[in-house]
Amino acid sequence: MPFAIIVRNLRLATGLILIVFVATHLITLALGLDSLAAMEAWRATLMGPWSSLPGTALLLFAAVTHAGLGLYSIARRRSLALSRSDLVQMILGLLTPPLLLAHVLLTRLSLGLAPDIEISYGLMLVIYWRLAPDYAIQQLLVVVLVWVHGAIGLYGWMVLKPAWTRLGRVVLPLLFAVPILALLGFVEAGKAALARFAGDEAFHGAVTANVVRLAAVKPQLDTVQAQVLTVYWAIALAVFALVGWRVFRSRFRTLHVTYDDGRVARGRRGLTVLEVSRLAAVPHAHVCAGRGRCGTCRITLDQGTLSPPGAIEAHALALLHAGAGVRLACQARLRDGDVAVTRLLPAYVGAEAARAPEDWAPRGAAEPVQ
Image (cartoon, rainbow, N blue to C red; front, side, top):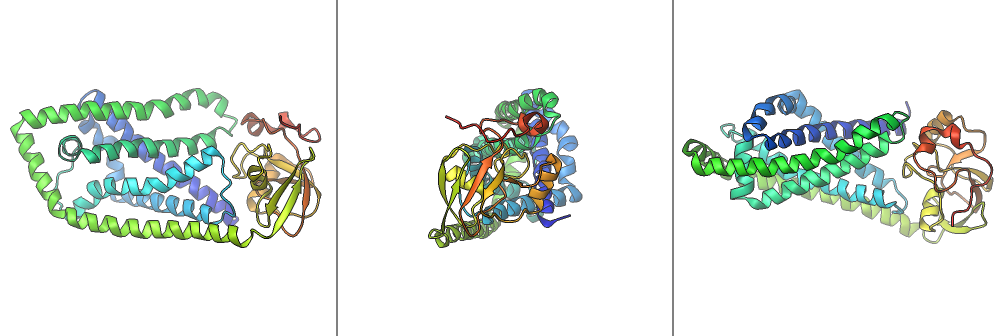
C-alpha cells in the first residue's frame, strides 16, 4: 500500500480511537445527571478498558500519532489557503494536546508518582468545583474543543459514505447531544460532590488526604507539563516556519490558471489547482476540503502540465472510474508553466455528489457560479 494511503488511513484510525475514548468519557459524565454514584458505578465498565495497560498504550499511541500526523499534514502544505471548517479544525487540532495534557497528567501520571492516590469522580469534581475552579473551566474547554474537533472530522468522513443517508439522522443528533448531556452531568455531579464534601466527614477526609498527596507531586507534574509543552510548541512553530519559508521562497514564481469560464487566477509553483482557486476566490467544488476523498473538485487539463497523479489521487480516480485526462484539483500541483483547466462539476455541489458520483456525471464545462 502506498505511503500516502497508509498515512491517511492511520490518521483516520487514530482519530476514531480518540473520539471513541472521548465519547466513553462524556457518556460517563452524562451519567452525573442520574447521580454521582451512577458515574462511579459505570466508570469501571466505560473507562476501565482505557485504564488497563493495553488500553493506555493504545490511547497514547493514538494521541501521539494523530497529533504527529496532523503536524505532518500542515508541514506538507505550500499555502494556508483553508476553508473555514479546515481553519477551525487546524486551530482545534493544535490546541487539543495542550488542553488534554493537564488532565492526563492529573489522572494518569499522578498515579505513577503517588500510587496511594485514590482517583475518583468525587475527588476530581471537588477539586474542579471547590479547590481549583480554573481546572473546571479548563475541563469545559477540553470537552467542547476536543469534541468539536472530533465531530467535524467524523462528519467529514462519514458524510461522503452512501450509508450517511440512513446513519445521518442518528449520528448528527448524537454529535450534539453527547457533549451537552456531559456538560449537564458534569455540573449536576459537581453539585452532588460538593454537598457530600460538606456533609460527609469520611468523604471530606478522604478527599483532603488525596489532595495533600496530589499537592506533593504537583511540582513534578508541572515540570513534565512544561517540558512536553515546550517540545510540542517548538515543533509546531518549526512546522509553520517551514510552510512560511515555502511561501516566501516561491512568491516570485508566479504562474497562472485559466478556468473554463474565462477567469484567470495567479498562483505559485507547488500549489494545487484547488489552492489557487481558494486564494483567488474562484468557485470550485471541494466537499472533502481537499483531502482527495470526494472527487468533486475534478478537472480536465486543457493546456500546460501539472504534477503527475500521486497514490491518493490515483486511488480516488480509480474509484470514480474517471476517464483519461481527468485530475483532482486538490492533488494536481502547478509545475513549470501556466495551465488551463475545466471544472467538471458545478461549484455548488454537496456531499451527494460524492455519495452518488454517477448522478453527477460531468456534462462539459462547469456552470459559472454568480
